[in-house]
Length: 458
Image 1 (cartoon, helix red, strand yellow):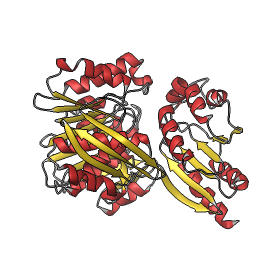
Image 2 (cartoon, helix red, strand yellow):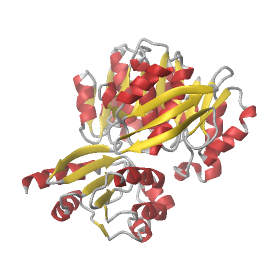
Image 3 (cartoon, one colour):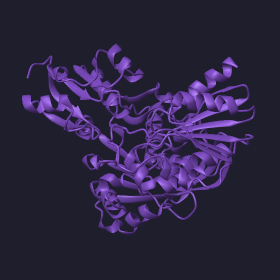
Image 4 (cartoon, one colour):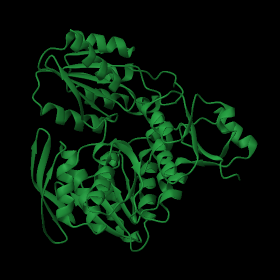
């Protein structure tokens, strides 16, 4: 194969794919890629030397030596079909990630919730401690330069592992973390039993001499802990509420952070001051500190880094305040994530909470629609927008009505399909002292940005 042939990413603008493309560019590789629309990610990649195509066409792969695809890419994608016809090798995103990390000591983080934040925390702790890790995260991390991936000169590679399509089983860890396991991605797994088995299989990938770090507060993760004698690796547990190898106690929450005592390794380690809010982030930080200690970081260094850590983009992100209306955006798209985010939001003590929720995927709406509705009930006003398909085909009979029917107790609920109309409506009813909270894994954050613009123009 000619040396000037490119590694081509189908869907290069996605947060996972763009990170890998950045790493290859940093290594001096030729990179190309396509996406359905231009974005900040594609513009950044183009500036760094990638050849970017807007739209998917067979001719885009003319100079490709390798195609990288995610599970979201349809078999009918013209670039994928062209690659197969031309005999161009095709690999999954996880295969490319493993090729980048295979010669490093691997810290791999997975779980239904908290992956991105925990991965970001570990990468930042190692960075601050002078370990110079490689990292690949499912979000853009301000404290790491606003990027989602980076190359270092150290021995560790810190990676977030996506369980949604089972591809995390291609990423065997030396130090692994399972944050939690809940019913999610059942379109792939079929049922909770199969999902739990996949996480057991992930833990089983860790070799002798490796460490699996498990959240003993989570009922489903506890099933792995009960069977730990069957694993080749060592197991460490962590908890914010009970007995474990690493425990957080004396927890004090405030509006934008927390403080807690950490015990581990049979002794009191010290107190962590955390600059991101919520009990869920206490758990994430505890897991991150535990992993950092296993990698050889001094606890005091971990504390210093966590005190300065700020969340990845779209994790309880303050978008701004206009006319006394505060707008916050969050990636929450699962009932448990919505619950955690709204707990933090309620602590802000605003007069009313107006929630704008964009459902993510038809399959998730089918499996979790009523639960999503129940979680959204605990607010004053709920505005539901059109389902963000994320490339999925529509499922007959699945729409916003299943979520709306589950919303029982809020003061007002309504469906507004158009994002611009939703922004106009909310800007019209919002009052000083209100909180507008946009949630979802799609592009719902643009509604919050538009609300701020409209309020400013008032």
